[in-house]
Image 1 (cartoon, one colour):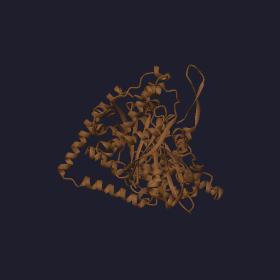
Image 2: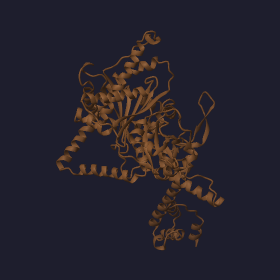
Image 3: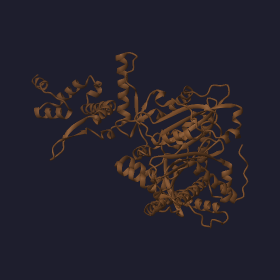
Image 4: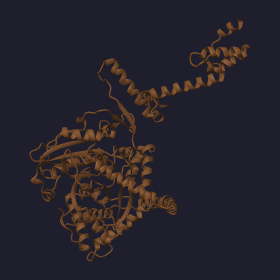
Length: 637
């Protein structure tokens, strides 16, 4: 009884403390075991409670489990509150105070997909119980942004926002209603927004490294009807230029679209050649143009192509083609002998180790010796900075372009031909600036002369998965880029034969040399590092100076191999425009659709005053390649 009275008067909170108290009080171990059993009988069965050490271990495990549950439920919300809370702190010897955020970087220590999600669900449930069916808070799911997406967000400038623009032009059948905003919502919400949560996302207010995914945002936030362009090509070009140069409130939305309907061919989105060649006026009398712009933080060009494919009536067929391509690659990879696999491993080792050293050395050399002939033109220009010049052209059937490439060189590709015709137009543009400067009476004759170098640097974006989104992967930014030094002037004289073909062969060799190194993977890895760890000024500096004074960016995006439809309405034309990276004056997108090769131009107006003329020079360069090889191509249907 005396022991019991003494023990009951003692407050014990933990097992070590109980042991220490028992030892200091001279208590028998049996009494300590009886107390442990008495205090844990409500939590554990008697068989377990009778063992002191087992009880201690299970109690500790239970405590850890409850702590983890609390962490998952409330830690994310606590981090959000702390990251937005400000306090005043003294500023040192000089006196005064400064407001700083508590836990400014605390979010990086707490999984956003834990606390935030569960807190939103808890808050939603409480709101529903308190206010019946009334919803007082929107459910928001936070997702981590891709590193390349964050890199594009951090490195954009006021004059060079990282925004992709493109238009889709549909033909409307006679006697039937044209596509409306309601039709667009039916297609885009069901087939794209519900499937890909990125199109329901916005950049988080508290941390630009995360998306906030919304449940069911109003479509009016993203889309609206506008008047149809009246002036052929001119007004549509002006709208595209505004889309490419104006900022987008990424805290509210990451994309938007404007829809307009008018007479067939009135906007210029569908060219007269396409209308006549397809005999569209016999069945269609109007067109609907959907002009999109999407921030690069949401997705790259390949991911956008996948999303557009999902929006079509032929989505199943397009997906089956992608799966077939993936299976083909898997078969080619698995159907190799042991010797071939060992040789492949060795070649990959050489490619990544020695190729990486070579790529870094070449890039350093290019950066130190880089020269852009457009620098002097931009410096001497009287035009205001920030204006763009845009156009879109159809080069011709894809089969004809491939015939030209293989006729000139067996190793030449469609990409090689694209670089050849673009650099040919760049040379013509430099000659135009040179002639303009030398005209009598020109006030700019005192300025630095325009120099036409023999070689220039160009930047080529590369998709890490070869332009394919693998099954189970979400949309994103899986792109790198490499810089290649290509010839601008032919080695032979101007009057020599096959000058265009000779330059294409040299360009093909230069691009093949650049592809032999993993420089695009190095660029991708560096962009990921800079996005997360480098200060903002360094990220912007690397974006501007990492292109080695490239005169242009040339992006090749695979389109659809056949004509597709949205709600039965045929898509006649689609064109995408590249956001100009800081420091590069010309951006070219080459894509294919329904067997045709189409390219777009987005250029600094000081460098390319007339984008339509620049596009004509590109077509002239392709015709020169045809004439060099005496190729007579059939007219496209």
